[in-house]
Amino acid sequence: MEHIFETDYNRILEKIDQIDPINYAKTRNNADGAVTYLSPYISRGVISTKEILNSVLKKRYSIKEIEPFVKELCWRDYFQRVAQAKDVNTDLKNIQYPVSNYSIPSNIVKGATGIKGVDNAIAKLYKTGYMHNHCRMYTAMMVCNIAQSYWHQPAKWMYYHLLDGDWASNACSWQWVAGANSQKKYYANQENINKYTKSNQENTFLDLPYEIIEKIEIPDQLKETENFSPALELPATSDLQINSELPTWIYNYYNLDPLWHKDKIGNRILLLDPALFAKYPVSKISIDFILKLSKNIYGIQLYTGSFDSLVKHYNLKNICYKEHPLNIDYYGTIENRDWISEQVTGYYPSFFAYWKKVEKKLLK
Image (cartoon, rainbow, N blue to C red; front, side, top):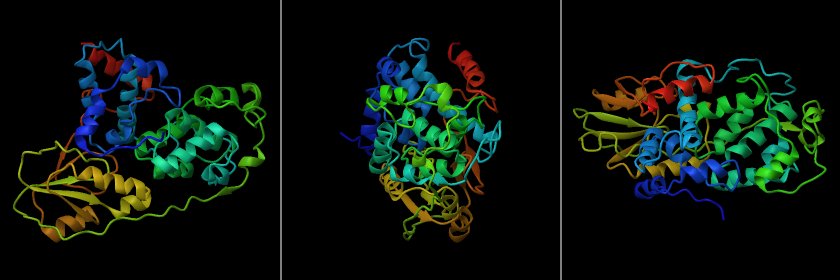
């Protein structure tokens, strides 16, 4: 059965309460493992990594007991910290090499590579807006390291379709697979894919030992490429009822927190900036998803346009928004997002270095 992501806030809170961090650690690498399916709500700012961790810790688990689960939450914070400090649109540590094209294999887009574990995951992505993390790695590996496509355009393709699309996590992860954000490229052979996707294929172009797979020529199935040309549909602005004397809270694609200043009186605007979406386009499924999520915020109104045009048109004076690397030309009062450890800031060249700092704070 395909997973359906609900948008009612109370149902999302119930999903947090249902987390089993022990079973998660045991099975999360399997495509049908006990993952939480909370990533779309984290990426859209409905809930935070800190909120999830606090909820789990209230059940009297220790940090050490659920360390794999805590680390996965911290990976999300880590990539955001990287994006605060670095331009994640460029190769972070190494120049990806070799690169034969700057497009994307056509059979990846079609979900017709012949590798069932990957093709099934792509079909699920198109239908539900979700792909298991292991399958994301397999897909990126085939694109960057087998087809030798430069990571950036394929990463945009995946981001476009993901309900949990987070550009920092997505870009950094694709670079990690491609060796641009790591010291070694990631490879998986057919045996590995069979194991974690419960497929049972043989005699494919990935059915090889690792010492061979890292040196193969681009297979025929991945030679044809195409440019990713996404469609973008943003809703039209409705007539806004604005009191410019009251404070205005700006929500966007990365902040749909229903509890943010919920007891205060003011203007609540969901800002969809066409310039942002032109650079980082997302699917209609993703737009429809955020519009439904926004209904959890009492009194919210939609504005499609730039931040500056919104402020000037409605003469807004007291403006508040949450920090995010993709906020374009925002100004006013900036508030921090919730972090598992707000004290651990700045750039760390590896997750391990970041995690050791966060772990020390958590174990105090």
